[in-house]
Length: 383
Image (tube, rainbow, N blue to C red):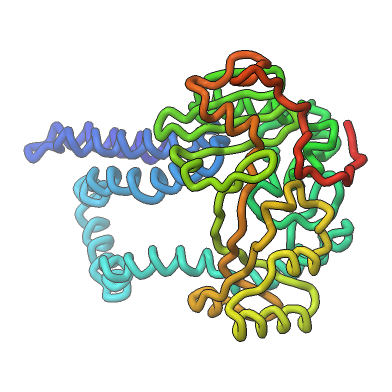
């Protein structure tokens, strides 16, 4: 704000000189300053991944472009005394500065900086520190612990969830008791925190993320994102099912629901070098490794909410990801399925969603947390 005020003061003084100062440049600076302010608003910072990416665009691209169009350097040179202006020009004309501000150098620093920021090797030591801290809390490996059972959480769609702390108020019991963060979907569905997180998620997605509430039943809430039609169906036990448009066209029927194909990159670090080497050898020899075998290595078989969705799941060798193998790190493509219960499918296919506790066709939705594939294991933590 101080820099903007100085610029406008200088621009105002310069407008009274014979050469004047173009008004569009001042407007460009104001626009750049407003974009910077917008990027730092708490509402955008709390808007999840979408808000985070908008912050990147505003702070790293749009605001700098507008500020560059305002030509603050030119204004500074015109307002400085001649002797000081010549000193500044001499500094800017120096070869080291010329190399630094060259477009090619700027491109290398921009792209290279993002690459280094995302490169896992640079964070090997912090990861080891976090691993030691997690072990002190009963966790294994570098995976985040479930806030309900303390076992490691693997990022498998439909089998895990993350309750972000920015949904909470300082006076909330969940905040005070640490009932937020990563968790197994099974633990959440069987805990007494589910109803609380159902309410907080609905509030977040409707008020902060722009979702429209299309329907509400006794056990579910159907939300729709206007931009692309993606549905979020929140269940009263805290579980959330996201269904993209036309996603169900790829579904495979199974008892109690449907299975949707899932494929994504997986990166994780294991404790034992011998185990890591065995998995790597199998990937190199057979090009695949059983996902259930990996789950057993992590020790969370009983934490899987929909075990049927993981039958036939596997890690697959990816030559690009193989370059990321170092230490005890594993990187591979993982292929499996995501289970969608029948009542969720019915809600997603009903125009506008169901509007009462009666399901299309006269049925009644099952109790929250019930499913033909639900494990019988329980989590004991409660408010």
